[in-house]
Amino acid sequence: GAVVSQHPSRVICKSGTSVKIECRSLDFQATTMFWYRQFPKQSLMLMATSNEGSKATYEQGVEKDKFLINHASLTLSTLTVTSAHPEDSSFYICSAAGDTSGNTIYFGEGSWLTVV
Amino acid sequence: QKEVEQNSGPLSVPEGAIASLNCTYSDRGSQSFFWYRQYSGKSPELIMSIYSNGDKEDGRFTAQLNKASQYVSLLIRDSQPSDSATYLCAVANTGTASKLTFGTGTRLQVML
Image 1: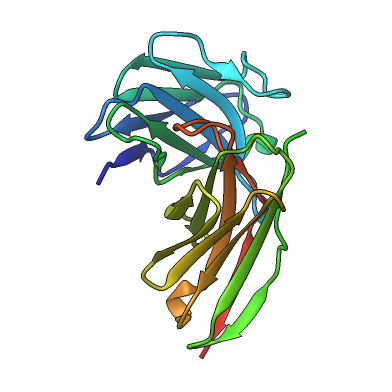
Image 2: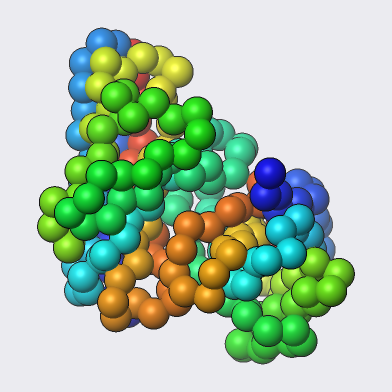
């Protein structure tokens, strides 16, 4: 089946620095990728939708200048958390849908971000 | 505001029993419905998808959809300890892959 890979799986960064998370579709072309954030014991909250070659669409309340999303190719999207603060510590998950995935959305393994 | 509601649980069932998980949604235009299983600290994994009213069975899992009542459920037969996880209901308002609205999840505990 389709596989979506995220890297890194865990990252610790200092407050004020930036961190990049990569999401790759390994065996299909992902025309659309979604970025979610999940705080402990809460559900997944959609942050933004990215389409290859165009600007991401951010959900209400998500700062686009803080969470930079790039979807430059059909197999790679990146989320950069800029000037990270401890409250940005969370589980970040990407998902992807594409021309061969049909109605199915495949999730990456997730990335744990801890800002100290 | 599109909402997906689930009882947070925990729902405790003995091994071998049937676990029944329920979900209601507010957007009548919803067309696609999904159940995901999420183990602690891990990403969600798709269990079932359902698009039309009625039942859909896959192994020990049965999804049930009632669009008139805006209700979707997941039955797990012969529950196993390995089924212990949080089950997330997700809804999309198109028939193709699109952004999902998730419920808060129901934590299932299968007891030995």
